[in-house]
Image (cartoon, rainbow, N blue to C red; front, side, top):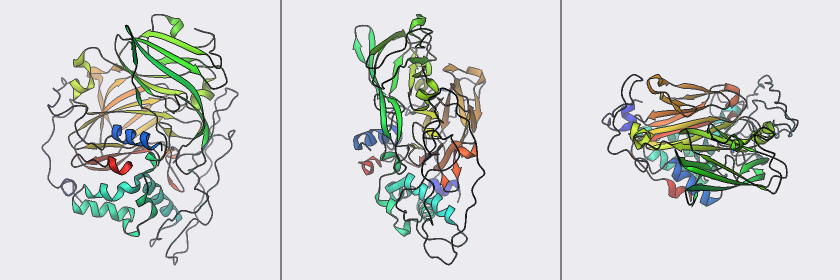
Length: 467
């Protein structure tokens, strides 16, 4: 099937993102944060939050001793094929249950629910692995499968329906996609205004039943204001920022503003270096001027292997004061996606969840999507975009300028932030994942650090289906 088959008609080309040594183009007139597909990350998250609704390595690592967990990768288990004569198949036994809180992370895929799922028909030459792998993708798409296929030209839509086996009328066709069944973090928190100050009020919380995905047993985690990641704090370069944090986790902590350069080092958030530990049930206030601009983070800096590993982390974005330096004006960016990885409690996660509960990036032809990669884990993760090269424009908040570069695999080390722009110029459903394979695929299919870039030929509104 050709690209033209997917598109129906070939769209007029966009001005491309410049090569590293070329000046940045003027933003296309139609580009704006509101432009493009209504099936956007913002729309998904808004509806998911209203519904109140992470597939994962289902491993738990962050130990209370403060020592980094020992990572071991056992041999891949063998897969016994199902009888080829069987017209239908279900797992002969459920995968193993989630390990205890003292277990070291492993590449094992997430356990299946106690009740055997309806995996559908066993096709010639398939094994149980194929049915389980398809089941994961069915959960990821849920009841969006049919309407999503319908937005493509008939040949492409029929192919997508065949891949998922829509004719089997499997149960997930009537269910929400998994990312809409779990609580998602990364909601932008609007500040209060107190004179010259932008004020954020946050709580530091226990999350006793955080779902990495909708079917594995919930885990004990931590978060800011009830979610992992915590809310995105967004300010403008030069703003005076005040953050009030109420400690509700029953142990001491401290919050570091990763990448911010405060004039007063006592605002840096490192217990016994710049402050005393914040005790339980107390309020800690931090005040600093927002600089430099760029993609930053905030997280615990006390018992951090445990606390950050369990979810005390969030995104902090400082927009440039000069409008000409914003991604919208400089590159015509239409969507802004914060992507925070972690690899301790709950296994390998993107924004606190594992596939199939990760929120996809959804865009229409002609958009430009900014992905802000932030690594809050203890391992490097090389993020690989299928079908698209990324134009990498900033590292650790600092613009790369003439050193900007193209790649389709971007390694992000612990503590690093990279900003990459994707020029949306061909439709399809494209995998987007860590390329350390034990972090993404196992004997029962994809899990953990897997996402998708869903590109539609025209802007569509599927949000009502998520209600």
